Image 1 (cartoon, one colour):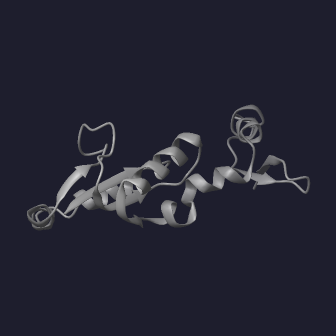
Image 2 (cartoon, one colour):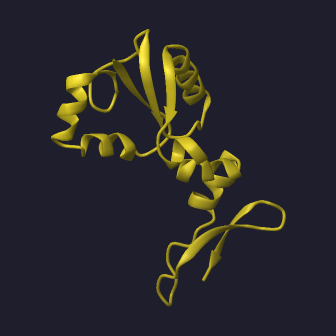
Length: 136
């Protein structure tokens, strides 16, 4: 059996969780070959005829979409693994605003110091849908 693990926009935590199987991973390897996983091996392209492909991470850009489509075409079964692959996860939250709004919210519109010290700030959406920092 050929197994692949494709990673899209995310933290690689799901692939690391597979590695955290420790000795149990040897039982998996005895029954199957991991033929593609960019985090745990030096491979650039998924091979043809993959039996099971696990996909982690969210589709965040065109490259992610193309990689997802490629692994889908090359595998018999595709499994979404983890919150990002299933629901968008933290990476998916960035799709709620434009890149310009995100950049402004994080880098342009933030107070980094105050005379009275640092305050806790969070990025909130205004009634117009634009991201803004709110001090709490």
